[in-house]
Image (cartoon, rainbow, N blue to C red; front, top):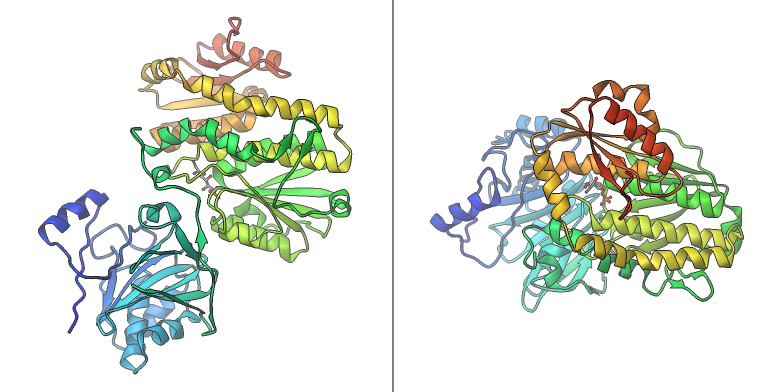
Length: 517
Ligand code: M6R
């Protein structure tokens, strides 16, 4: 008979690669997963895949009712070898195989009992020619090759093998073989879905000479911004054309409130977007963290416009917030980077950022293009509601169209940035200050420093500094003050003085040529 070989290691992927050198695997079909520890510590026993009898499973997601499922499986004699929630899949499916079901039917029969999120891939040595997959609230894409078929959570992982993809939707399953895929809902309804050909190229999933993806993506910003603007603006008429927005004039005029929802960096982009929209369209905008919005009984009505901002289009809280707003009758527009993603599919209107795949964990070009796309939405709404004149919008658009070149200019020389980074490398805490649209930028700067350098940092509205955080300022706490020329310049400059007066060390972010600051 056929045999399933398993290799698992702890730590970085490179240790798995080493292990495989000593214990190579061969075969025509395989599954793998890098686990992000939720239930149970990172250890070899807890690593995926999880096996029970002939069944082997990998899983991305969280099974919320795993304790009760585990207790009843144990009561029926199943012996668990890990602390994970995932392991319940292999035992449940094994039980169904033992009862005489084939693999596909066995997987299908257990899914209704699972509460929580999953993208699973299941193999069995009893049916060694197929992988059975199922999806609910965790992403899963299928890549079609020539005599070979691929699975992944995300498109960039497969760009070297194929650009033809089928996206699984919620509560769908697929039986994957070398020749292709058979799709069905978890309730057993068979259906077909045409594959989509992706324009992203394999080179977009390579580092292309950069040390890491984040650096590459920082340098991709000018190109990404050009792509966000492409075909959408007319510098002659001041028109903004958003190809996937079908809101009619009556609906645009009826909007009485906008809810902007997102997580993390995308939320910061939303805070900037609020200013654009209120300025141009004169509609009040509330910005919420998606994880708060969904549980706060929001006052959404049919006259609300809900805007979700998400790079991946798969962030669970943002998706749930969107569904909640929709349920309450709101029109839903999303600013999103990934075509066909769950958030894009659930939305009435979409503004794609066209930033290309963002592979680095830290959002860079996505953030930039989200702000730009929200700016376009603001100008679009302003024109349609008559709160912004063609002349004013034309002027704004011509400034926006210069942005990619300005960003390019900034990126040509990073010696100052590197010098400053070296100087402050030993600091334990940073403060970031900004006013107006630079307040969210300060928040984002602080998140970036935390996430990438593991240095504690806080972002503050510069005007709030005297209401508390000023107590922290001394020569050990560098303060980044974002103070370009513009309406908040004088005010922010006085905050800078307050920092200096307390021996604080200031890193100024200023307009080129501003020697005063
Ligand atoms: O894919 P999304 O834009 O929905 O992701 C939301 C956040 O997880 C994300 O912006 C995160 O905060 C950044 N990658 C951090 O740099």
